[in-house]
Image 1 (cartoon, one colour):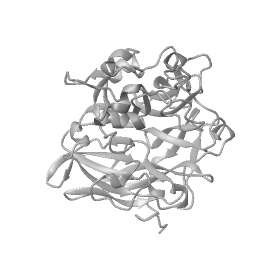
Image 2 (spheres, rainbow, N blue to C red):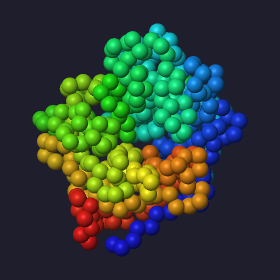
Image 3 (cartoon, rainbow, N blue to C red):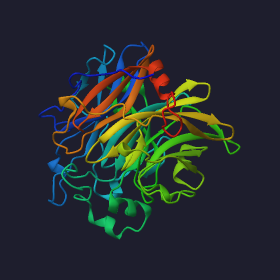
Length: 401
């Protein structure tokens, strides 16, 4: 197969809303799910704007990150966004005593999503719908201009020697999971749509994002276990990983969601940067899709500056007996990257196409993507043709067909 055709929005389907305080500056990186009617597509998108009322130190106005809701009645050709209020908002507390939340089992726990909720992914596990977000304890400043993660940190974190204090001093991302009530979200009952489950990554260990699950358990090391994709900033922090210090894709297995931040979880390196467009990092993009026969479609992104920025490609995994799945096909080419004028950088210097959600309608894969970290577009491709193209490459990215 010589060529794969992917269609892209000729213009953004959602743009920042001027005058909307929480979505004034950027909208990007949408999660998608398909309605039971088989035609309506629902979206959660990342958004931000300046928030001067939470400027703690006078260094810069924070830019807390929110999630907004939108829907499409025409299979992604257009979307109507609800800019009246965020669907999910960070609490934005600076007092440690107020930074707690009640989880799904009634426990009062630290709210690692206090500062922002970034890059949503929506998926199902064993019949329940979940949302993961990359979160920070405190909102960053204008992070596209410089490293502004620490512009609004309260004084108490500098003497707190717990894991929370260590995480807070870096203000790195911790991935948090919510149970999602889709009906509550669809009907605008946002207050009851999200139930805090737990953190899935350890912020005291390393920044970790691009985290989501396969929809079923796998037999791994003699146990039926949940299986998670994640992208640690420093993979060598995990047992069995050496000499890999660039952000890479890992798999983790555990019996319970709360086990993934403990020694009960088993981790395995899945993929590292191999090609020039992946030089700085790679991470999984939208949740894996079951292709049948023990095969799984995994979308992933790579980053390299100054030539490529963030671009997207695909791999296929194959289930193994009593072990983690392994890569059987990996495309060495960039398949999704910024080309159109509206997709190219404006506020940000880095070219960026970033997919975080997809649905399948008949044989069409419909993907939502953030462009230039400011706008949202939709890409469509024939799923069977995409699979056939991926199968032209072996596990090392060598084109064999």
